[in-house]
Image (cartoon, rainbow, N blue to C red; front, side):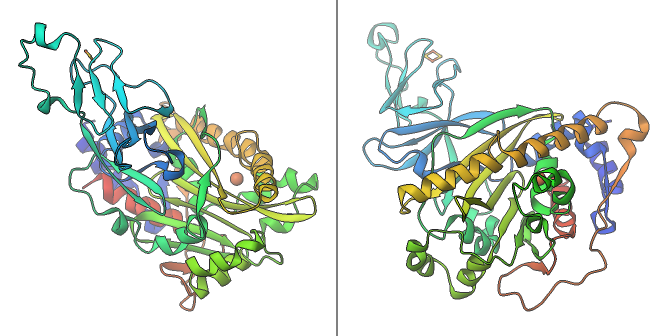
Length: 425
Ligand code: FES
Ligand code: FE
């Protein structure tokens, strides 16, 4: 089948409004190719947080839809810029380090040197071998479009994208609770691991699947490591335009954030947002397509402590992804609170965390069942009908389509609707 034929087949078989999602969307290699071409090279994708490159000259190399880019903070002007990480002489990868501090990048092949504003500034022996006629001005690094919200830097290969602020839209109201309540900073480099799992399973799990927690993570409660009430369906599920969504667990008897920062939270959030933050037990969601956000609470030394992280489900192939996780902490919290929050994260959702270990087993097994050429496995329809009989609530203070129950698949239906609309554009 050509890509166009696959897309026509998708239009007939992916029916989110009926709760029908076929398994081949997680297992067919053609889907990976189509997603790369029609989705990942067109939409905004998360790259880094500004706190990862605080000083002039700091840089990180990141992946933007499977292409390496350099994000660098100008050593003279402090402006954050993105460049395709490719030397303009013969196409060598210019920078092979994950991070560092440099005013200039010198290519390891023939030694062309670029200022970190992208300008070509040095070429070995150029006067002699090019007779002084090399077009320096036309050989700068290729700029990549980037933009940021609350310190979160996104990039896109789309030459005419919807502005980032509109892409995030009403979802910002919720994102502010997670990452805009105070100045947040990334702790350490992001953690990375590769698993044999399809990327949408992670995005889908975080945007819509609170239902799995009682069973997948049941052993954690039976061991007494978390109260079983953590898996309650009480709370809200909300989605906004463009396929973004959150699950908000409430109520929470204890304030799980640093109390000394309450005045700061009140400055950065409106009254309704602060009330929700005070009452929240967990927040789990996804910014379309593949950035998931998590605010979770764990009891550390007798006190409920929150931890905040984001993770990217970066597709490598249809059945393989890299999971990249950034752990965030309140910059102005005490060292003691930061340490306890880190402990809370490591115990739960870091690569060694008890929840994350459970989830990756599920993600890899679903991928295995959806892969290959057995007709039943390829054409099987997942059931996404949960909560279809419910109506959204009208009295919730935040924007979007809101349900007063976390056990529904409304967010997944909205996610796959947007996914389908996006790739058939
Ligand atoms: Fe970079 Fe030749 S490829 S200097
Ligand atoms: Fe889980």
